[in-house]
Length: 314
Image (cartoon, rainbow, N blue to C red; front, side, top):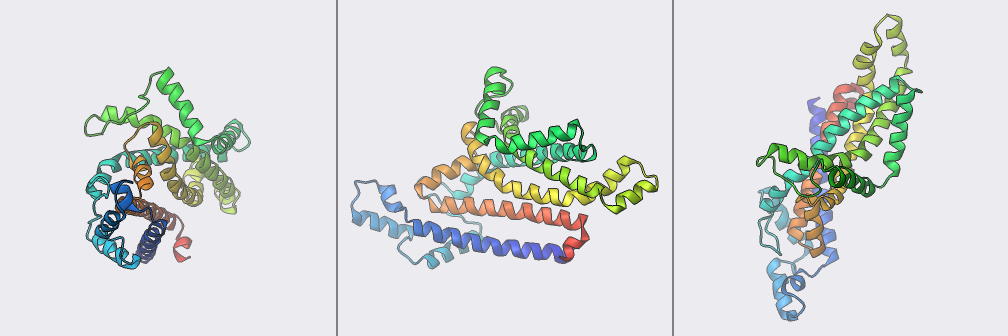
């Protein structure tokens, strides 16, 4: 297991370097003319060129990237070109919002998907199985923004159970934080629950058809012990793989949800700074996203390796 984890960490670090360089290269090719955007259309070309030189944009891309990487490895992500705000501070203020969303959706998806997926797999062909499959189809078919808007109209506007917009930090009020984060989490969870529960159901059905299950039943083991101790362990690996892939989709969905609920998170920050071409902030957001994806995939790989020793050998 230690060698397995070390190999996954090494591949994750390599991915970070590759993604950071490609992102920096693409941003440089885009050439948003930051100097012109900072000084305005009335500024002279000489002033714009001087501003670009001050930002270091007149140097070769590789040299710019090397300087950025050296500072990033020391924990210095720079300052925003447009607001002069420290990038670490700007992201640190918004990160708890997005982390609350992602962690909340992951917990809800894991619990609900495994509960109903296992239930549907064991009771395949019954009402629960048909319901799970129907919810899975609807969850994939319905656009995420439509589900979100319907939930806002129903639970926030009409029933007034949750606030329609805004965010309350946990440190300020735990109950307020829960009320402001519940509806966004539920709206994001619809699609992920649909996908993961279907995967869990299929994995459970496949596991129940294996010879070892018939052998365990022939020995007189109760159904719940067969399912919980043996079937669920073997069915968890493919479900965890899908759950890990869903994490990337969650980051994209968080952008939409944060806009609808006016949440001051990473998603809304990414939109505003990307349109202006604020490279220090964009690079920091890219790296935080990649680090999150790498950590989630590492956790999934470790769990799969623990559940299935053959995966470690592969």
